[in-house]
Amino acid sequence: MMSSSSKSNATDGSEHNFVNNTIRIVNCHAEGECGDVIVSGISDIPGDTLWEKSRYIAKDNRLRNYVLQEPRGGVFRHVNLLIKPINPDAAVAFIIMEPEDTPPMSGSNSICVATVALETGIVPITSDIMNFKMESPGGLVDVTAKCNGGKVTQIRVTNVPSFAGDIGVSLEVEGIGSLTVDTAYGGDSFVVVNSEDLGLDITPDNAKQLVEVGMSITQAANEQLKFVHPTNEGFASHFSFCMIAKPIFHDEDGVAISHTAVAIQPGKIDRSPTGTGCSARMALLHAKGQLKKGDKMIGRSIIG
Image 1 (tube, rainbow, N blue to C red):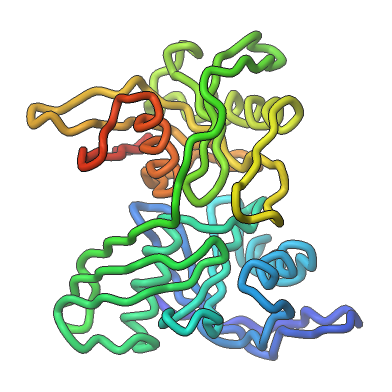
Image 2: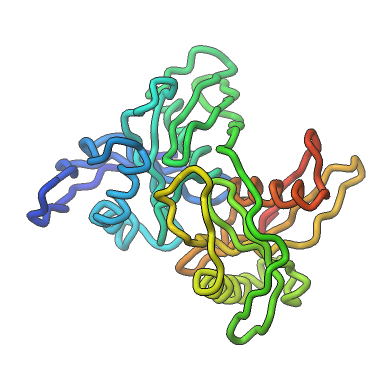
């Protein structure tokens, strides 16, 4: 993890200029998935709630373009903005900026944010086990961090509520045909398809095909299906990700193994197991009677 500073000329005469002269970004990753964190240089973002602030960032696009596009960014990079929490129970708040979307929550990005907050002293490390809350646009998440010598060695995040959407619905995908898919929410919206129906194994050698197929399925889902969040009326009917999932199987201890490839717009595969995707799949498996309360599940990505 390293720190870098960037000079910003991101002023365009608009009403609210929230970008200061120097932005400090701390580089971080979770299982290879880049989740850099802006720790200073951005003034207050308009909005009464964190969700409204994230919608401002998404619509305004100046900060997103500045940190996510070349030469500072690229499709491989996510960037999180640390801001003052609105919820008094939270130690920090963060807005997630991904290549195409500004989502309510992200598992890998929350791990990066917690790590950076602790190792930079924004949340002081006062014991070997740190417990605190962070506020995401999708709600509060609980963090448990193991620390040693001022460094974080392990992060555990308790996600926002997750739920199954439609189960076993038909989707027509150009170039593929008719598929049976599920939809779910695990901090963001997913359309889920069985890898066996696509004839694709989840291996790095198939990454290009998995991305291309995933983008086609996401596009078709956004054209043909609807997604409704039960409590967040501001969450438009929109599918952010396609999860291509092998049928669930179990290890020698009876633990469910979820091996998936999550395609992220505009076209990449998540290197991490995708925390929101794991949550969405657990909700689906529970709804299908394949996973009961108290059962464990291990998520595996395209690289393990």
